[in-house]
Length: 104
Image (cartoon, rainbow, N blue to C red):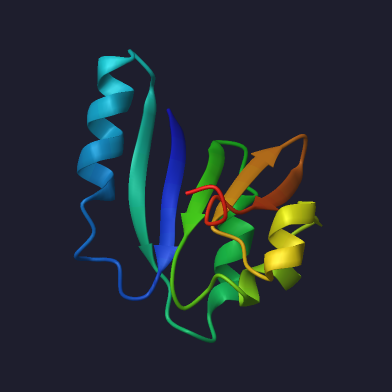
C-alpha cells in the first residue's frame, strides 16, 4: 500500500481523508490518505517520514506552507514565486514542492 498525507496543525477536522480514500477506492488504487497533525516546530522530524519508499506525497496546510519549503529538495518556480508550497510529490528519492493556490 502507498500512502499520502495531509500535513498541518490542526488537521483532525479535515474531510480530506474521506474524500481522497473514496476516490482511491473507486479508482482501484492501493493508496491510503492519512492525516498528519504536525505541531509547529516539529516539521523537520516529520519530513523524514515523507521520504519513506511507500509515501507518494502530501498536501500541506497551515501553519506549514512556508516553512516546508526549506525541507524540500526542489521547489517549483510558481511555488517559489508565491513563497508557499501546498503539494509535495515524492519521486526518485526527492521531495518536490508545488502550489495549486495560484491556479485554484
